[in-house]
Amino acid sequence: MQSCKRELRLIRQPRINKTMRFSFILLLLLAAPLLVRTQETASSRPLVNDDIVQLSRARVIASVIIEKIKTSQCKFETSPSALVALKQAGVADEFLLVVRLLL
Image (cartoon, rainbow, N blue to C red):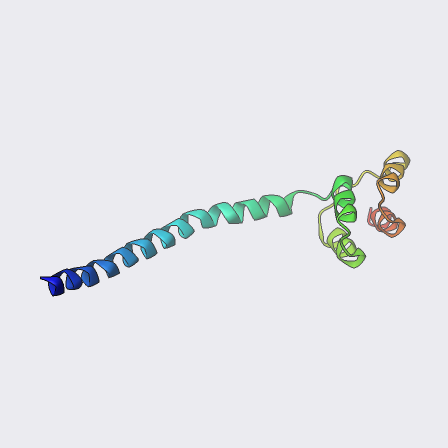
């Protein structure tokens, strides 16, 4: 009797594993388009002054911020008052120069 129970347990266990594996794969397949769409939305939004302020405050390395500016679609406000606001927010002069030169 005990050996029958043990055999039944061994038979049922792989079925649970297969069901869990199938559920996990199905979940990944359903979630993948959402993840891709989120990435596309984030990368298709133009870079603006507030993004530079956030990166600067997060102490992201200057070369990384400059590369991000160069490789992104940008929509910077470069009026004198906007540049003053960036400077007051702690954005380094080198970023202001890059922002100004790229327009």
